[in-house]
Image 1: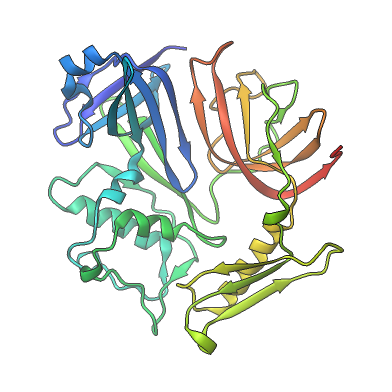
Image 2: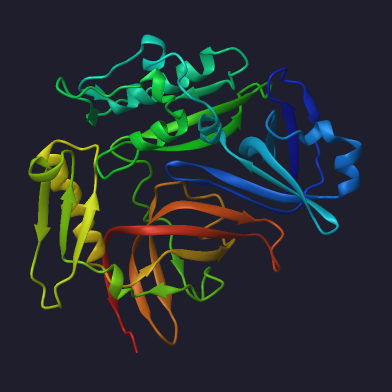
Length: 364
């Protein structure tokens, strides 16, 4: 596989280099987050050509076999011994360096029973409408039935609070009945420009993948950690919403399951609707009742599951068999980090979350 690293000035569009010699390269996307890239440079190169990697105003891309597979902004350079470490993050990271200085996203708000995806697009539209703030990011036109704000309590961007646009953007995708997003990058059809995109999924990103599988002895290269945490377990969840004192909104989801009673309070101070609180409480209880999870696996490239053949949000079957556990279940991919220089060939560390169901047994 051919690979090269490109950098570009964020404002002028000038190509700074088409072959940045990064080593120890690691990169990948995230679900409802920007995803990151790290690598190291020869310090002499950075000193001689600092403009190639100027943090805070330089785009960086990974191109593999003529396709851009990752893009973002360089944010940090620092020396580590005899090397210079570089850190970058993808497009939504930029919003965390921006604030609403006009109020209500410059008259786009406030919002009452608004589709969350509209507010997400409005945040980007506002951020990119201000001088020297246009990254050229395109946000999907996906719509949803997930709403925010009410006549009694509109969703507001008050100028005197200087709301952080990144925090608000991520908040709109934080929950069990909210849209998903991820950042993607590619060449346009003519290969004359880079397409920077925020993919929005409703009701979720990804798909149930029956054509892929990750299994011990096949493509999982290390025994993953399996966590059984009794202090994280709960079969009683109290969702606590808006209000103070006796007026505070609360909903409880509880079952008896033959185990010692464990309780957890889920603090949701911005939620007023009781049905939403009930839904969030039930979802949190279901999650906390599952003992035994696999949160990360490291896989190698195989024909059955080539690196890059999955997407953020996909559900995949995972089978882990070792001296301590026998785990089989569907897991959701929430992101991954590609290690192209791993010993023995390229690998990916895939981050996982529980999917629909688990069958778990064999703890010795």
